[in-house]
Length: 293
Image (cartoon, rainbow, N blue to C red):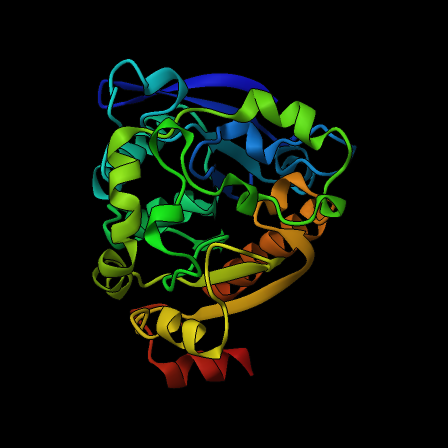
């Protein structure tokens, strides 16, 4: 695993990169949530929790980016960007990455919390087809009043990020201090608007999407009514919604990280299999079925 900097049309995006021994089967792009950084997906609290290590071991390149307005890009974007502008910046960064690195089957986005908003916006306005999206810690129906959302000056109920402490290794909180970054102004202001922004963005997503809610998710509702509202605008996408037991909102920093990461990469495998099994556009379904037989 090494640190790199991507050129996103003049904006430097810092990132962590782990690569497999041979050519990558695909690139897993890991996108952190609000107030965090790329290291969220590289937990060192106990062996086996890092998505970067696991993905590289299974044959994928894993690129964990610091979102626009965080770390290296903060001086260029002191107020951050709206989610749609973040999507354009991310695509520029991925184009830069692809110009110097093998990408295999393409980009698969694994995103957490506010990073999930960026993943959906990136899929909605993608210049190249993505393999799929795996999103945790994000819904569309809030479980709290908007004034309790994390924002500027550290206000908001930050304890809801964690849930019961038993879900995390003892070193998770000590090591987690190094991952924390200020939430950019535009991101904080746009946060309460997400339930209104979501339907238009989701309606333009066409790739498979898997949502995961932690057992102790405290920011978003995931009851039957809320899940129906989450699915409804994604009419052009195949959608899966799952529950991760023994986890709080920050799944990738907890004991459940390895389980969740394996399931996310399993979903990537399903997306690749479906792509391989799909009938080419220049052949009729009948011909494809005959060939399979």
